[in-house]
Length: 176
Picture (cartoon, rainbow, N blue to C red):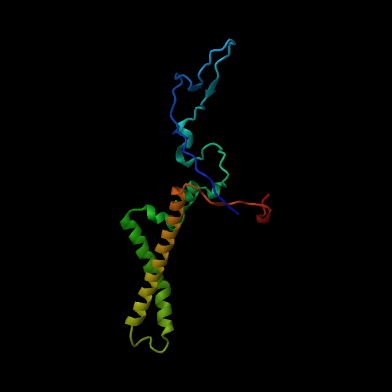
């Protein structure tokens, strides 16, 4: 089942507090009545900034979306997986990885298939099998680029969306 979650405005960023700083409080206005009431203070918890460093997960939230389906966690998983992490590299490194992928496929798969596929004509025209091998390498690079684009656009759209659709797990998935 897919459900939608309305995104609330993000909380203010955590800040560092010194030990001598006074506690932050939310003062409610006092009503002057005949009865003497103590002022009510709502404390804002102090969250040290260091607890969110190095990709650590913030404290438990009331978000119903499972952790692995939350867009930020999908982004983290995608950015560290093969071959999607290539997009984070410099353009020259990205292009060289694509070139090596295409050339490797062309030499290791495309060329043997092209030479053995042309059984009777294998020595007459070496240009045709070479072009077939290069085409197979280009085809694999195209598939890799399209796959990376689709993966990044999916996660990017989920990060920018005001609502997040997710799959709920139930007894039929083996989890209760």
